[in-house]
Image 1 (tube, helix red, strand yellow):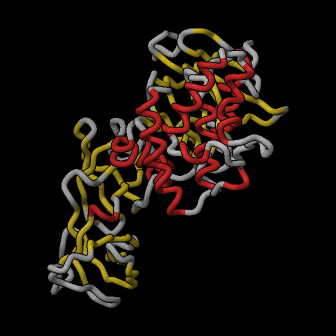
Image 2 (cartoon, rainbow, N blue to C red; image 1 turned 45 degrees about the horizontal axis):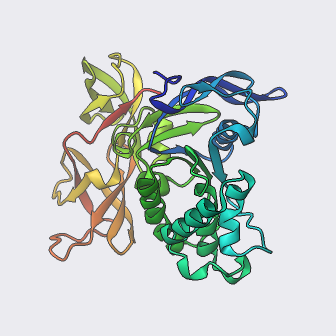
Image 3 (cartoon, rainbow, N blue to C red; image 1 turned 180 degrees about the vertical axis):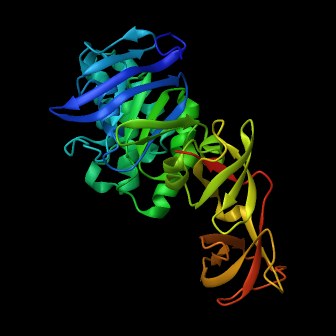
Length: 363
């Protein structure tokens, strides 16, 4: 991985961060490309914000190296790095107008007045706040304040913009709307965005690529499709979206394809992240939407079981099924008008698995 070259916006090489005896980050290596919307995703305490703060220069690197466009920057102070940060709390200057807030960073850099005015005007248009230039922050909604914070951070034209859970203070509908706007802003400005979140949906909908983190380690890096459809391990499969994890024994192996047997005896074909060993134990991951229910008069099918609970979710219905093999699984069924069969608690059902939907996880 060429983490120290000019082709890479942010390069992280074997980075370790310790706070006393506590290790917050263990041997992190990443390549964040120029003009990319890259997300650090994981639960609270996984090290994602610590890594972001190290890129910004707010935390020292214990071991390893960090590069910005090929230049090693561990010893570079925050104000000398070509990055800006947008925090969860926007920290706007309450006594300044929207336009003055946006212009502040450029004034600190002593840019020419005409350039500051032109850039401020451009940023106001970009975040759709042209009519709010003379308002103070307390006269704005939460979403408008967030746009001002984004405009202020982008106005000096940083090479990299770091975003530390900037949507978490907004309500659900506004968060959903801002996801679209953030991605559009990134495309229009061409600035590399490094976004931190614990929200899987945010990561999946906005990111060009995602690094999933847990307990100070990077578990997997890839596109949203790769992370969701081909999780590298049990943590990633369980953390990203919803999945069914079933204990199996690996029987036959052909490269990364294998035959896995459930505890009750049913065998399923699966693909693995890495070549498995016959006879080993593991788990298979099957997404709920990759299963379908069909009638089973005698309960015989590829998988068979009994529906024991249903939850109506509007666009789809969640069926909880107890398999004859002993496992409990979730099946999501679209609520289409033409659906032929309606399954209720107590009904017997056969479960059909979509081709290629079974993922073997050995870790």
